[in-house]
Image (cartoon, rainbow, N blue to C red; front, side, top):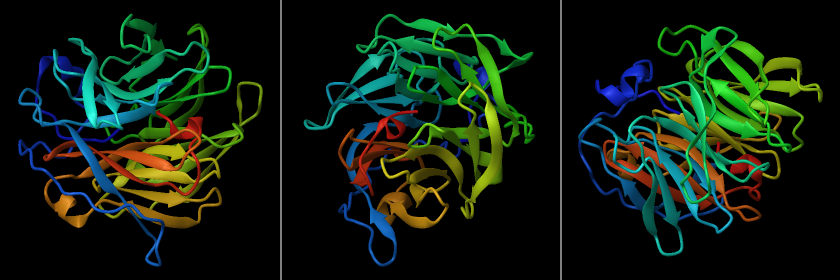
Length: 342
């Protein structure tokens, strides 16, 4: 999830550390382009699918995150800064290019969404309140899955990754407001009873995704513009951790991560409506770009993406003063669980 500048309001009072750029109130309509494979200039072109949200008067922004496909092929996204009463979880019918509200409440600030392989429910991270909640696939039956301190410190849960058994791995962005490396990776058992800190001293842990073989986790550290790799020992612990990729983002910073069937990493950029693609060895394969006129019209950041399971059509959430949009592009490989939500 991005850092944006936030206006003070009660529901987001505890999100003061989450500084989002793009507090404008414009609601322009950026044009689309054409999707195509990576070209000689290593650019992957994305084009507009539809606008989903406009800037909310109450919060001064909109911020789409966490795209995840359900079993019916619909795409669910969250709007992090939606005020009480406005859609906080949105279902998109991509064929018809229509959307409808799935869930709203008066409290949560949800920064990611992903379906559990264990119980099939939709799990959301509530950054503002340090909680993980879940909904049934229709958006009803809100339950608090996890709440409370972890090793004496409240979490700022950002993104989620599930292992095959349904245990959760959460990026904890502690230290973001202070600019301190207090971020963590927290493992929560699928019943919510066992909580373990797998990694700490991370620089605003943000994106999190398993690699293809579930042997390790890719973690983006927003305030250091780097991607770390956490190798798991197969027994619920960590065997090693190292800096895997240093992202040359310029003014942009590392946001969420997705991984395709070939193990390629799609690194979203806060501060630029684009994603950088790397292979598992750290070689830069290309950059997903929206049309320049759309960026100039008020789209400032890409937050995350999802690839159709078993297909290569990808959908990217892009936001800014122009509103919240979905863009599509051709991924380099097929979609898997690691590229479907988080």
